[in-house]
Amino acid sequence: MAKKGFAGKWLFWGVFVMLASVAVVVTIRPDPVWVDLAPVTRGPMEITIKEEGKTRVRDRYVVSSPVAGYLHRVLLEVGDPVIPGELLTEVDPMPASTLDARSRAEAEAKVQSARSALNSTRQKVAAAEAEADLAVRELARLQALSDDRFVSDERLQQARAAAARTQAILRSARFDEEVMAHELAAARTRLEVSAARANGDGAVERVPVRSPVNGSVLGIVRKSEGVIQAGEAILELGDPGALEVVVDVLSFDAVNLQPGMVTRLTGWGGGTLDATVRRVEPVGFEDVSALGVEERRVQVVADITSPADAWQSLGDGYRVDAEFLLWRSDNVLQVPESAIFVTDGQHQVFRVVDDIAVLTDVSVGRTNGFHTVIQEGLTEADNVVRHPDRQLEDGSRIRLR
Image 1 (cartoon, rainbow, N blue to C red):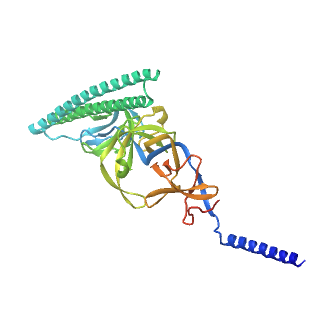
Image 2: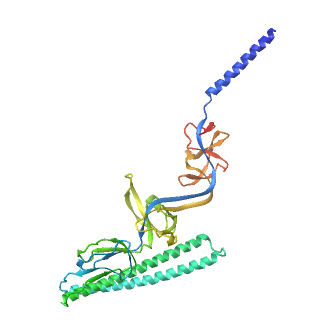
Image 3: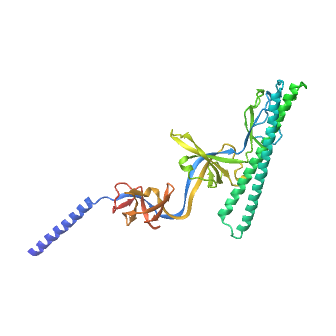
């Protein structure tokens, strides 16, 4: 009987000691760390540069007064269409002084210079027409081959961009030809008006100011009537159907851009438009950001390659967001950038295995600021800790927020 009481007493104290040990272990054991998890995924990834830009008419022309005199009121409004030779306004010339031999020689030289410039521009138009015709025929040839899968989509897209670019160059050359013809007519008018007044041939009729190009009124510099000097601006004309996009890019990013690079245009109120970089200007300038930070920026000019029907509502000076595509892959292993940290030059993550954080070395590739390519160290089935804090160590227990 005494032995049974002795055994019960030892059993009681044994259970008590075991429970006390469990309580001590539970008390001193660290609490699980609250974390956020992110899966390791496989899919497409892009690296882009996104900046705000604006549209502008590629070819602009400022119509000025050919003679000094009295300007009649301009009846046109901004946005009104004009055609070559259309009467914009008129100027009543002021009496001219006697035309001496030197003045006559200068006026005749200006006429000859304008005629030579017109002939030179016509040669450029002929060259642009030849290049545009070649690009269109090349595009037609590649489209015929693409039906049989003999041409890659990238090569066909380059041909479309080349055709659009040569057509834009042709429009610009024809625009310059119209401008040079107007300059020649203006030089002849100045010579004839001055000669008529100097020779006393009677009153000179009003000098018409006509449109040299086919386009629209982009701005009215001088609308009201009044005295005007020769060469003073009256109107600004251009073709709103020939738009380009100008983007101010940080010089740090501009070194990664080159002509022909694919660009997407968004944030203008419509769908996404396709464009290609035409020129990265070699000269930078200083700009001050909204936060007062001085920045070095470079102007990048891009041509819209989407069909004109898709951006008919765009006009001169409209805001757009330009996204330049630097790199793209359709199938890469990636994790959020916030999950990766560097220890002694080694990239690491906390991989979660059975609610335990395991410190794992990884080899990383490209990053777009949000996700990073994983080359080695993880698999698609893994989960990693996002924004790991200092409480988290190798082997720490974790709990999901």
